[in-house]
Every structure is written in C-alpha cells, then in structure tokens.
Image (cartoon, rainbow, N blue to C red; front, side, top):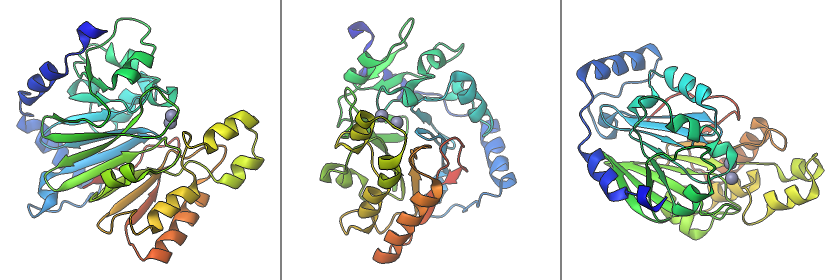
Length: 305
Ligand SMILES: [Zn+2]
Ligand SMILES: [Zn+2]
C-alpha cells in the first residue's frame, strides 16, 4: 500500500480538474425546476448551488454545480450506487473523490467493486487505518491517505476530517465547506465529545446519527454482547443522545437550517420514534431547523443548500 498513497499528487491533480461543460450545467438547472426545488437566484449562499442527497443510511452524495462531486461512503452494492446516482442525473465517472468514514461493511460494501468500474478515476480518501482494514478483494484503487483531523481540498470543496469515538480502526466524520456554506456529517459514534461538537459549529446542514431507541434495543432480539457494543462509548448514538445534542446550548447551532437524523436501526428504532424525541427537544430549546428523518433504506430528497 505505501507506494499507492499519493495524497499530495492527487490534490494537485484535482485542483486542475477540467471545468464542467456548459451542457451539464443546463441539464442540472432544468432538473432542479422539474423536481420542484426552489431556485434561489443569484443572492447570498444559494448562488453556489450546492446539492446533497443521502443515498442510503450512511451514504451521501454532495456536489457543487458547476464544480466538484464527492461520494461519502459506499455501503450499497455497485449496481445500487450507480442506479441511485443515475436517478439524480449523476454518474460515478464524474465523481472527484470517494470519502470513507470507516471500514464497517454498511459503509464500504460496494467500494472495492465500484473503484474497479470502467472509467472510474475518483481516488478514495481514507485514513491509513481505514484503508488497511478494508478487504479490497483485488487490486487496490488509488488511495489518498489523510490523517484523522486533517483538512484537505477536493477542487472547490474544503473538507475537514475529525476523529469520532467508534469501534473501527481509525474512524472519522467530515465537514464540507464551500464559501460560507458548511455541511457536517457525523454518524457511527458512541457519544458526542466536545471536539465533535466543535467541528459541527456554524453548520447550516447537519446529518446526525439517531441510531436506536434505548428501550427498543434493550428488549429487542440482538444478542447481549451486540447490545453492549451499541450502547458503549464506541457504539452508536441513541435518539436520546441526539436530542441532548439538539437541546444543548453548546450543541445544535442556532443557524442550522436543516437537521437530518440518519443511520436509524431498522430493528431497534423507527422514524416515528426518532422524530418524536427530536421534536420534543426542539420545542424545549426553541431552535427551529427543518427536521428530516431519513428512512434507512430509501434515498432522500435532494437538499439544495
Ligand atoms: Zn454504520
Ligand atoms: Zn460503524
């Protein structure tokens, strides 16, 4: 692997990425109107036309139009990823990078095959621990290794990585910033340390884990050891932990416009439970983001930031 870790070279190459042809821009704007998305004109942050979509419970697609495109995690199989990208007028060959949070199968299932797809040029961005823990099952792709906590750029997207407490080799969350717009993605963590809250400050858009209802988990069918793992400080955030963050003065930022609750367990949670607890927290603290609860198996709407 060492010979393949060429982060610096990749960054240089990405900065020189060709501009998106005008034809693509026209198609994208038309698609925005057809799908009923508000087109906010040329004022303020919306001028940048940032779009994001949750493809599955831990998998995210984000792009700036015209500009650069990234995929965060690849838990679905290759066919599903290509189909879900196709449904929003995108294709894998146009990706500028695939960012990986950690090596658990619900985040990398389709990655090895996806990177071997004909025409795929996007490098994989991962920490060394994560890259080494993935079973590539064949030739490794080009990997841009970064240290947890590093900041790097993919074209005009500024990416900040940060360590999260989870039982994986070297797991991270990400924020993506373009101009004044910041999007944060944090799932798969046992609790929310102050360091993670710090990275989420000033975010207009947050995807936050709301994995399980503790009561459903306790009485549910999982073996005792698995329950212990989920509840541990390196496991997953419960609905209650998410609501504590929402209500905390040092937690959910006042300026957050959209809060997506994601990575819901299909066995130990339901969108109804997650929403109920979060709405109670929002009422208590008076913050007013738009609250979206992501269905575990469905792709979300396209969010225009
Ligand atoms: Zn996960
Ligand atoms: Zn995980």
